[in-house]
Amino acid sequence: MSDARRIIRQALTIGVLSVLVAAAVHFPLVNRFVRGEFRETFFSRADYPGIRLITLQEAEDLWAAGETVFFDARGAGPYGEGHVPRARNLPEAESRQMLPADVLKLLRERALVVYCEGGDCQSSLLLAKRLHDEGFKDIRVMTGGWEEWKKAGLPEDRGDDQE
Image (tube, rainbow, N blue to C red; front, side):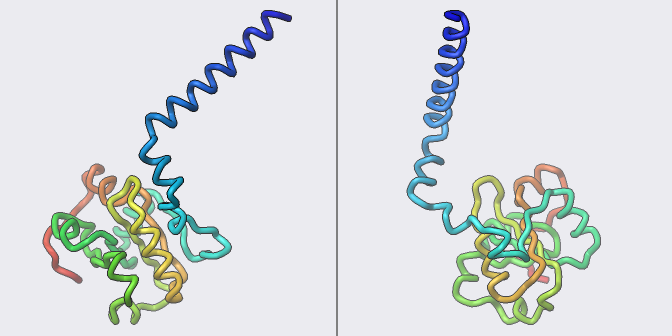
């Protein structure tokens, strides 16, 4: 019995140390979570049934088909440095005021793909929620964002030309 207790105690010690090390390594992220920075980017399927997260491969397939509208939620500077070809620049911060008229004229059933920088960028999720609130029914968020698209060596455009 003493061997079993020792093993359990060692396993618990390792578990507790793992949690402490993980919290220490990710302290800035944990701190942001505790302050509530991510609260507004969480969404439930019940509240936002038209939004779903997609992979890079799904986004690439939609882009190749040419019928889906892509929105880059980053600011004009990063957008000008590189973006998905045919993507429209719609910075999330600007969309909080009012969506541009050309966006509001799109069919509400049309598929939209939204992306931002990737990683812990929250702009694409916030923009997706804004588009949903305007009545769009098929919004997909490319979770890897621009960084994953670029890293995969997929086509890119530069400059601020809007199509």
